[in-house]
Image (tube, rainbow, N blue to C red; front, top):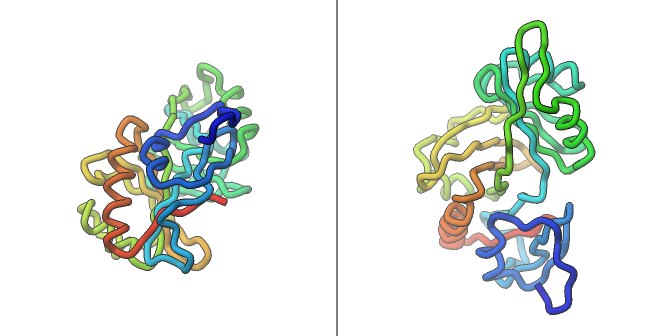
Length: 221
């Protein structure tokens, strides 16, 4: 951050490692975000890595969670370990049968859900309880994204049916990661969420391998 700049209220879990190559900063959702990088390719890189930790997250679980999900106006993913699109670019993921993960740009939307659930509610099928989520978020994309993943994960993402909107819980460089493969701008990208404690290691490793594949960091703007 530049001298005299107003410090943001929120800091990305990968801020320290991103700062090594960031050359310009901005603030998004009250979080400091890199706006340019020294390694930023001026043409489309073959693979890129983007920090999206500025998005807001919320979790809930319990026997009554599917019914509560629908009651809140959220699209209920139809099967375990799948995700559904939310209006405004967010997503709701269904981890197994009765645990859910919400990620969205809109803080007000996530706050509404948090306030509605409070410490828990009772539905006809059973209780629903909040899950504390402070995940780091990153997106891996580009034509050679799978070349990176094949070096760090034992899941064959080339065989994944992205159209089925799968949610994949796996290990990436030894870090527990939830991966949401999806299509953005006609290309498959891999949105990831992980424990913020291990995010710097995950980012650094992915960035190193991406660079070997001709990639670069990418801004969120």
